[in-house]
Length: 314
Image 1: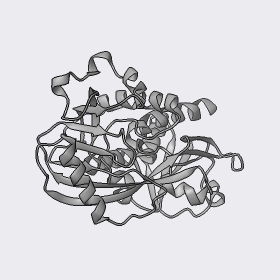
Image 2 (image 1 turned 90 degrees about the horizontal axis):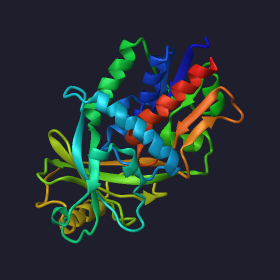
Image 3 (image 1 turned 45 degrees about the vertical axis):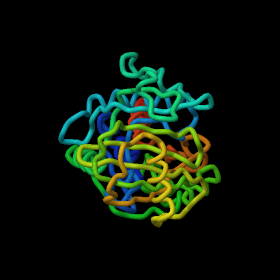
């Protein structure tokens, strides 16, 4: 029984946690109110970039672990690739993430490489995971390692604690009600899945409320986005769609207006800092949620640290 762990949640944080625990010899069961195809993780752009995740020092460490893990994961069959990525910044931007990349994988952009109106940017080689390909790959890998999946909604921490000797809470925004967490807030994201664009993948997050980015995937592009805090609206907003397209047009990041194929909305679990600790009341529950807009960026790093900690405690 000491070698069994129950992971609650089937998004990127839950799946990576489960897989790392399996690597350490644990028997793992995932309990989730929804399959991975219905999670926030399946909707997002999923590029490696520490966006709105705190505290910065820990996030950068987890992101560095994840970066190395994605290098091992690169394959045409699982949806992971390493792509060139332009990150616009200004004097107020935190650029400490650049120091955690290999020296030859990031540099400042030259003037002739900058889009119109942009004064500073980094050019980096970063991992991109395509959720419709990558999440099924991870889930199948979990099942192949004798993992068990149970479709069930957990409605309280007391119920969660009863699931097993060791339980990991990877419920993302679900933890808001489960834990009555006043530090956890939704950051509403609306993105456009578009025909594949020819320009560079890039992000400009220097102005709150005017988040702009393009992630070029194998057959399409993700164009965004929104970063509205404390906004619970999960419905498509046509006004936001137009704002996203207008910003793209004026940003200089793309040469043409894309054809929109699909519009997706989700709530990022933004927290004052990632909750990565045992519960004070239910000592068999370990919390691993609140990764903001960087779930794919830090998930592997958190999973690696958590699995190491569990292994040492046996």
